[in-house]
Length: 138
Image (cartoon, rainbow, N blue to C red; front, top):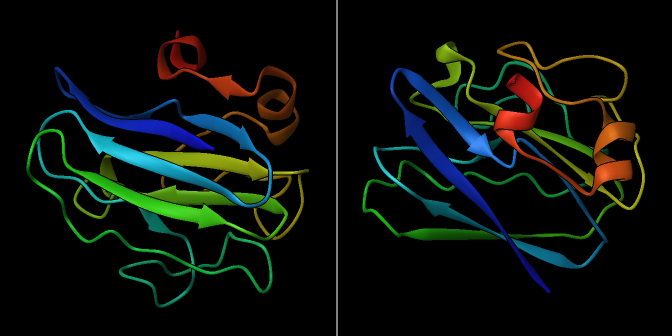
């Protein structure tokens, strides 16, 4: 099963859409760039500019590197249950963050927000399966 998450740039806003996504373990998530230059990078200390770890213990961290070609994709398969927070390296300081919950909430990201922005709480993501950026911010 593949699920798409889009990087978008809307006016002066930079965001992932959906900003919150629920998947089952073993799911491959495909990130597709809509415009601009972006990355999808897991919050794991030492992974790119991440200073904290916000993925489950034992989970594989990822970093797409900066992708600039419109329509380009990056995939990551989620095998470990829990809550994963991630960010865009070029736009981390602008709050471009997202959250994926695999199977059920849990891990170091649970119960708090990433250091660089806000995301839906994990239970809302589980209940709705996907939370669009417009729904969350609007």
